[in-house]
Image (cartoon, rainbow, N blue to C red):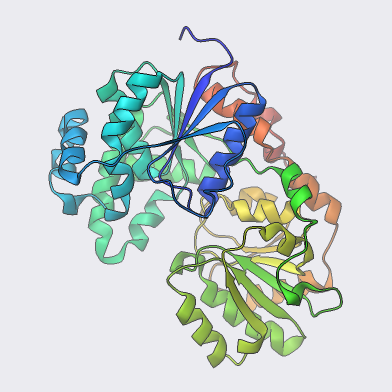
Length: 418
């Protein structure tokens, strides 16, 4: 393409909800701004916990939402082969609707602003970006990024599984129209290739950026929880949306075993539909007084820096950014060796303890071991620095063909532990 650095880059997100994807995109945007690039943060909805956390230098652009019938007609115009999936609303998973309704205004944005590159995140937003570029006739280079294990999303859909299979059909046909396809872990890339029938060679792996320098500043702030005071019993910390895929039920049951062996407390950060069920389970297990569910917190790093151990009990994780954040805070980590990138972060167990998914006894034993023998703080923080935003930014720009190809062999996050 004709453009030369600095580039005009548009980052497309469905919202600024308090999850890992929004943090990743904000970290990427901030790194691009540091590199001298002009960055637009294009939002399908201007809402979410990170609404007031947009880094300086990113220009927010909020897409106007069209009525569903108009948006669906535009999608059909961009993908005439997709009539089976797009003609009837029931055939498109409903949680894709917000991104879907912004399609028309994204077309207008691309024609008006003419960015050099468009980077999209999350499955439905990726599809909308592909359709919008087609309709706009835009020369922008397009990168779609997969932040979920597609086969697990289909499996987790339950009675809606057939809808997700239709969405997987859209992915299979649409993703190859992008200039670059990025997965956040090798495991996600391999799953995407298998689930959507996309050639594995078309999918690059770029681990999510985690800004260890910013975390180092924020972890010094005082936490908003009395259980983290000096001299208090050690805290087992969990974090994530309170939903079945995070399997906090297993973490609660493992904590009940830990509590029978020693004094400790459990804090789980995050919100979600399972809050009531988890609180009730803690009561039935007899540990209700030692379990706290404070919801979403603005600074989880202050918690991680003071916790005795961070425990991830997920059934699957695309990468597991929260583990890198915990390592950056120096916190010992225990995690399930679940489908996705957790094992990649922890180097197969070199940087934290791995246990089988759903194994209550193994998780409890690993937590007790981490509390008794936390290991070396500096080595954990060094591992977190391997996931730097500047490295991820170079690899994103290389995947787009805007800079010379980054050498993946030099990626410290892929280094084999000694």
